[in-house]
Amino acid sequence: MRPFATQIDRRPWGRQALIALVRYRHRGWNGDHAHPVQDALRALDDLSALAPGVPVVLIGHSMGGRAALAVAGRDAVRGVVALAPWCPRGEPVAHLRGRAAVFLHDEADPVTSAAQTWDFARRAAAGGADVQCVPMPAGGHAMLRGAGRWHELAADYTGALLAWAPATHRDAQPANRRD
Image (cartoon, rainbow, N blue to C red; front, side):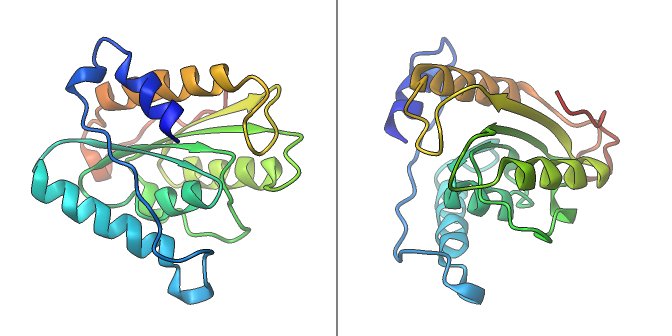
């Protein structure tokens, strides 16, 4: 994820951003324990203590995308950039109401399902999230082919989400769309 942080730092607004990387204490999702979610929540608590009231945009890849989406209902979180996220069928979306989420996924990804990502995004949009879906032409799951494009888009969308403000936060009626 460091190349994404570097790309954000290069933006005119990037020097004003506080960038933090989350390291998981355990490998895997681990069933109901959902250890990555616990780690993401701990990181959000630490960030809120360090910089209270600062809007947060989460960027996550694969399982990290799932964890970012799972904690996106926290007050500090303005939005999520989910990169080839793992979005199992039936994953809850109600907590995304009034939030923005951008999904980037290579439809030929052999590890996580782009179709499940688009389904998750449609359900989130129907529930009141402001959603954009960006099918990536290459990169696979590791986002290696065309890596620069993945980095650029993630940084661009992060900047857009930091500038984005829902009308009344939880009661917002955002335009639901799939680009």
